[in-house]
Image (tube, rainbow, N blue to C red; front, top):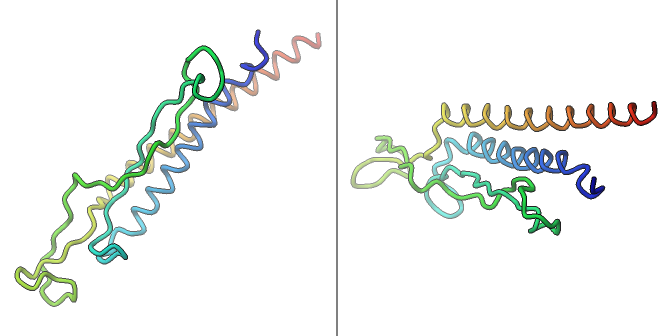
Length: 145
């Protein structure tokens, strides 16, 4: 057995945990900015989405080209979901002609489901690391006799 790959399982799960933690941070940012109608860039806040990509071991210096985990490749604004338009002509940021105010495209129900999914994925990776640690502990106890 190659000693470089002994901890490969833990390494893969740890990349999943790090990526899901970043996803949880972005979801929290989306929830926190759900009512922000004016950002420094102008216009309402746009929901952010985390894009994951798989990592091959060959790209991190290990030969073989098998899967090596996951990482966040980018965090992008959700430009596909339309902004929420609310009629409020007395609002200072309302469109002068229509009286509509553009609110962020953050859907709280979707964000909560996404939050639970990311949390469960994080927990699954944590459980995998725990199981791997237990297997390694049993292997060492068998070697000790």
